[in-house]
Image (cartoon, rainbow, N blue to C red; front, top):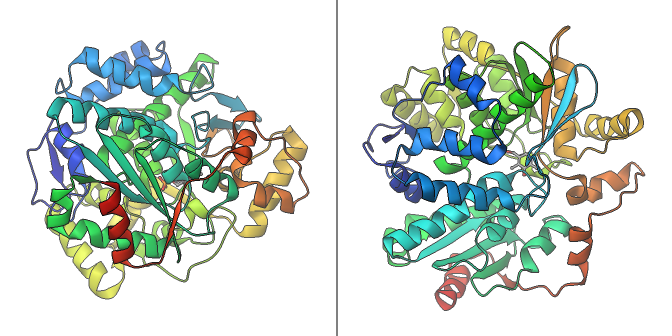
Length: 462
Ligand SMILES: *Cc1c(COP(=O)(O)O)cnc(C)c1O
């Protein structure tokens, strides 16, 4: 399988090079040259597979022999053996119309583990195969950093440095990152906010000499391996419903930030999975809701919410959708992205807006409604939602029509966001793995928000 850039100036690279490249060298995002099609016969064969077996089949379509099947099988098995639930991503029924897909049974209790356990093992494999060191550098508002560290801690050939905004991630997220004591992990706590962290990373990656000399690699959600790993659970969830006797097309409701998770759903649908509606759930940072309803993509004023992993103004994976919306035309995408840089907005044509409305429906959840949804689900079903999942559930309740079934993706365990849960006087018992973090020593270095301060620490670490 070849990978090409949405901006048309990178083409013909294989899967491993696409993973290593992360962001395409022309500034675009990498996509498969053709999207593999899955026939109804294949779907019925896949219906009986375990999560890991299914993941192996999906990856095989996109990796196309570049990693020998035996090796790939081992990578996949190792990645999902760390999950606490036998089903990896079990589906729980709340009522006839609404099911929850629990994606938080990995080591850090958030859905990002599903992609980052795999990416960690994949990087380790690549490092061995190519006999070269991999230095991962990333910024996090909380979940990505913890997941990425957990994906590579203690692995040979890899070092990881994660920047997080000092005092601005949840307590559990901070502990998950900083209580790791492996020598290949460096946590930098940056004075500033998440945007400062991201700006520093961007500028360090833009320093091509520095990037190449230290073999810097990214872990953000634009990496194609992350998207592919996330398509698997759409298939798996669908099969679980079918195996329970639920027939017909299924809706998915997806708590959305950088558009990575919902893009994976869009890709699954394009591969042939019978998905009915893709419901895009946002919070008060509702840029994507406005795009879907009005055809104008324009970041607005930043809102603090209870679902910080969705407090995103510029959704980094959005360009991939623009590319497919415009018939895989890289020139059009380039023009749009240039105008976005210039004017800070993208306006699509009326006929394209019609298509967008066939692809997605959207709903932005306000802060009070998010908390109310957590309370209501707790009372009605005895099921505690984290605030991100609550956005997905609220959107599902709003947009599921009569006779339809919706699977709401649960992207985090509620223990990760106890700050919000406490506000509505619900007391939860932490899972023992999270409780244990509170007694462990923390390892982190506080730095000011300058490139030089970060660079200095990196040079010592490498
Ligand atoms: C990252 C994250 C999201 C958003 O996913 P995207 O792929 O960025 O759209 C939602 N919920 C949680 C808990 C997350 O960590």
